[in-house]
Image 1 (tube, helix red, strand yellow):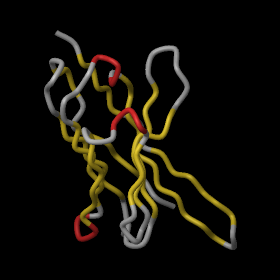
Image 2 (spheres, helix red, strand yellow; image 1 turned 45 degrees about the vertical axis):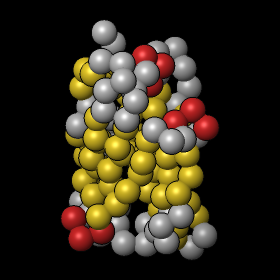
Image 3 (tube, helix red, strand yellow; image 1 turned 135 degrees about the horizontal axis):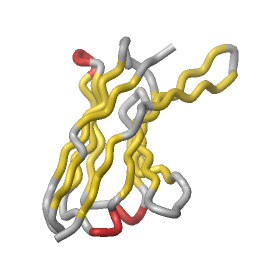
Length: 118
């Protein structure tokens, strides 16, 4: 089992930057990790994903602005968000995907609020 704790959210003006952090309770080495978000009245969507091998994937709306990275030594995943837009306003959730006997298990943090507004 993995416990995830997000931090780094807050209020930022359009065009600003934030870096979200997700600290895991154990080793994240070789674990697929991702960031999701859920805006007001919207469904939760995948924002960025990084496999244990380092392959990344982003939703089109954040490509070129957001960067997912990981520090396995610190058991931490980051989401660097630049050129933020009001439509990026959402609760951001960290996700870890583990497989055991071919069954997928998803673990989630509690979420951190990001508000982009002038």
